[in-house]
Image (tube, rainbow over all chains, first blue to last red; front, top):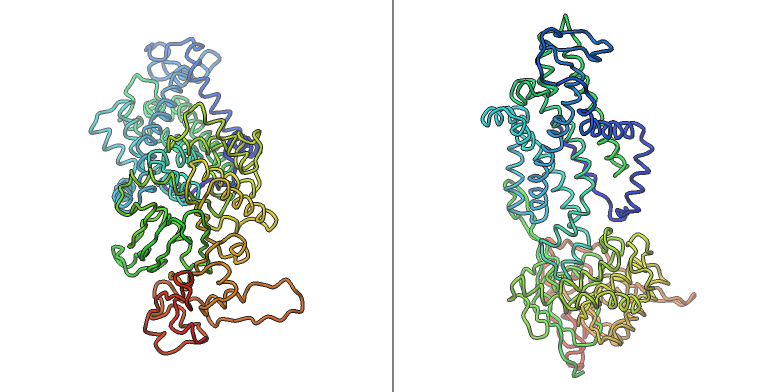
Length: 297
Length: 328
């Protein structure tokens, strides 16, 4: 998981990366059945996150001990938990929390990691050394431990989890972006705009960034899966979302006590995490292969 | 020639440090360009020729300050470039442009032709926004592309067409000097001739000055007024095209010219074959750079660096860096 891919999928300058280029990538992606399944699953998850809560009939947080620990039935598809709450309803409501954490924490990681990587790769020399040694320190520190440390200092809440997982994603982005930036900056068209008198700012944001966008997208998709997994882990440890929030990791943790007699309480949130992470992983891998068929692992 | 001097390069050096060892200390330098001086007059075409790795491209890039020169002075229109700040250099780039070798790498794949050209005008702020489109079409017309091609992306063009776009980009700022860095080397022969003729026509029309960097002597002969021969980071000979091709004085130039194939079957031609390889630019030979391969080498060639001297009584128009060119 902490393995950073070192083969950098930089688009070759010849690869069309315009509207026509995206069509080619879509074509390649379409041939990859696993990626397509992942993509559709993600789409369904997003729809569920937005519209799901309107269709559920139970309250995700209201306690009713008369209904506690019921097995799955036609009334309660995934059964009920130790507080008599419908597990299916809670999973549907948890979807938006999970995706929110996944997307936002990766966005935080991108917001910090991408500029760091670009500056390191573009300016090189001392700035590169300073930034990359800082990134190395972040990398050397076990990611989950770092996240745990941050959350326990800042206090357990969803936003702090996002921050912690965001910090954890920074090195991945910084390294990928640095490598891609170095490759793109050596191309002649960058020299050409420099010869026209373009400022560094212009070169970086108008000429380098658009040409390294594909490795960033790939990295983001794969990172979302990791972020969701770590966020659930933090909630499982009681450091993330606090009860009664229907967060899957927290639900898993609560269901743990009833594992043997009432496995459905823990099983369904666990399956939900697995499905979402798998969907993002499949889609991310597919995207990587579609952007650069040569680096097929 | 009483032409006005446009570009003067004095004692230009470009060394690349080699980092190595613990903590990346500089252990040595690649002396890509080692003390070269020449001038380019307004309206002429000067060629820099030499084999791969002799520093001709580096010289071009250093003149444009795409790479900061290690030492030396570049004077463009009586302005010393090395004394300018970064911003001032950005402004002066309007007058000096470059056409690159690889037409597939020199255009941003995400910009249409019109965007490439408009960006150039925007950066230097030379055309009001409403006049840009018109000027784009005008430029395309000048380099032989059709108006409907303006909104296409680079991958929709052939190599020759892309090179025309590169030329249009250079022209878009109305520069005085264009450095053509192997501008036609990547093109096949028929396209190469078209592009060369295009460059010649544009030169007449816009009174351009070219510094033409090439390893192709046929191309150089076609386009140049004067030729500078480089070897291992130094200038070996500077001469007018005709005196260089008719009466080369430096042994290296002779060897180089003898390598041009003669398209006449049966005609025997003396081919000077040089022994060995080009020495490393990290540790170039002392004395004359060429002495390790020169068939006429004498003792002081190995120790004394030959300066450029006028050949015969030609004044300054034919300069040779050889101790013994009179005798060979």
